[in-house]
Length: 219
Ligand code: MN
Image (cartoon, rainbow, N blue to C red):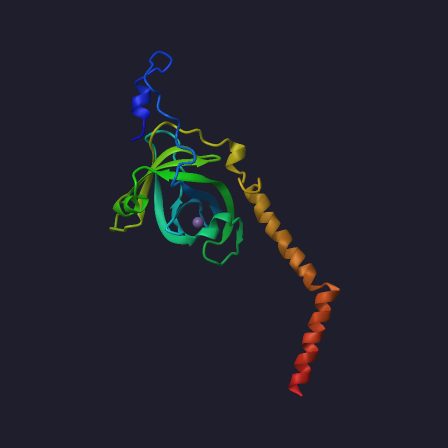
């Protein structure tokens, strides 16, 4: 619930009641989160929380809601390894999740209540995000899917409205500053440089040696 209600009812220029401390920044127990923008068959955002040594993950087809009371679908997906939070690049076409991935936002998160894992199992996580773009409270709630699926959640904007990123920031990596197109194009460049490397005198020389060894062993 947070302090939104409390704050809305009071004008702290006029009352000497405490306004409530700002949202916790680096709280003990805060862990990292990352949101990756993923242009797969359908564009979506992957919301990941460091927990239990892995990244608990949800796919958000519409990204985060920004206005208090708004809710968006969040589909729980498989845990990802911690290192995945650094991943930005292109998943080759034909591979699972093929498409461009951007590190869209990252920072620390905090779960209200003492046991984040218990909250996760009970299907309700009340979060404070302190990212570059996402700042404030959100709540993840598990719902029952149409066919009884257990991976359906909602992410709700709780607390106050949050400021959505500008159009420019929407298409900018917090890791490298690149746009989705720049990330996709960089992969093409990478491929070209690999190809060039294969044609370099050194690798041609190595290839000739390999050929020679093969021929020799056949004799
Ligand atoms: Mn994805």
